[in-house]
Image (cartoon, rainbow, N blue to C red; front, side, top):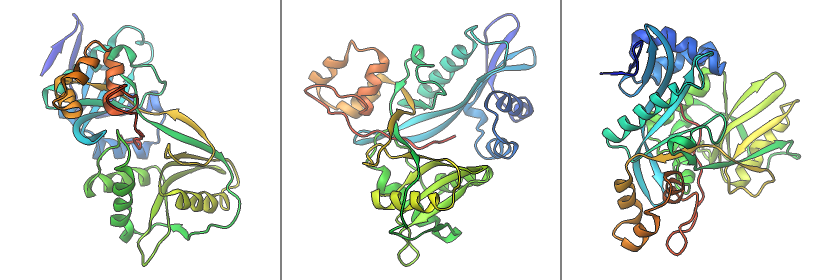
Length: 325
């Protein structure tokens, strides 16, 4: 399918033939490693949910979609995870990205999604499209003193099912979290490995860990991009890595951790099917539906996912979504 957007421009689904241009644009805008980019286009790229805007045969703007299941408060809804939104240098501020994103959001609604989710490099980038901050993490930097009170070790392959169980058990408490099954979790571990990532597990009892961290080393520094554990497990992982990292240690913690750190918005969300979202979250409650009827879509999205309260009807709830691509 194609959409005409100008005398020289064409908006269409991406194809596997577009991968060389798409990979080059990804590298130009995001600077990821060749290994990660190769992994993404081999394992994550879904042409039927990804769009490109072309000037003649040159890829100018792109966006990638992955249908997922996402928690919104007490229920699970179909959502479109959007990544890799990029415009070629020199073509910015011409409304091209907006055209691609509007097409993506229409497509998400057409295939039955209730919401769309992405991680903006700068919060507010997609406000005009109805997106608003919907999740947060606590960013911790420093060193954790002392010996780990729980054993923390590098992961071995047989632990993957137990790590998935940790993720499912802990992340079910957070709205906007992505529901991962065995296939999705294996893909996340493979993504981490594609960029020379490490996996640290903690609290192993009879070979069954109670938490884990995905981390990357850059020189002497270590960055933890996903830490899923209870407070004792998270502390043990930070102590373990502090003893082995001679540079800066940075961790993205769950927002409810009591350890010191700065809460920072991470993901942004918009509702693409308002009637379906209202029914899923508010059910048969005409008073609550009337209370949100005139709200801007960004504020409505925050209320329905739980990032903001609806006074007299719904409280705010913890919202956290681990990185997905």
